[in-house]
Length: 102
Ligand code: SF4
Image 1 (cartoon, protein in one colour):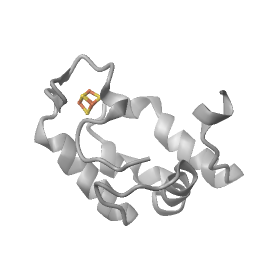
Image 2 (cartoon, helix red, strand yellow):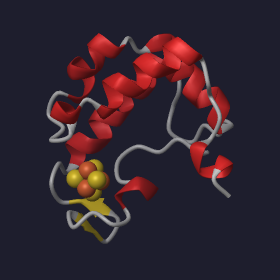
Image 3 (cartoon, protein in one colour):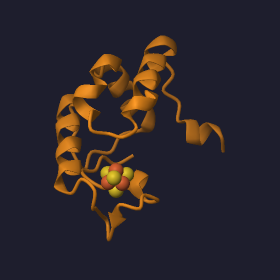
Image 4 (cartoon, protein in one colour):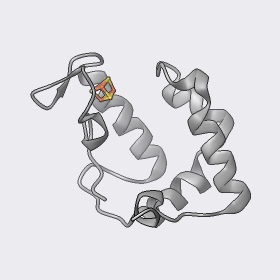
């Protein structure tokens, strides 16, 4: 996977994506990515296997600190990310779920 800053493949179906730019958060989307990437020791353009990236997130980001990075996110209240990181720390799995289902 290649690390990017700003709108990415995950944004492909988002109605706020317009000509490759996030029209909801504007440049702030990239600023948030850059801040998180620095915390993870990564930078835009880095290429790493999924398992390595998941392992870095698991080891660096404490579930309870997600709000400090992503507090603005409208999905925060659903706790997908906090629960996901907590589960990673419990079972340690770093397999790519998309690859496992192919
Ligand atoms: S709001 Fe912006 S950053 Fe979030 S998914 Fe949509 S395009 Fe991507």
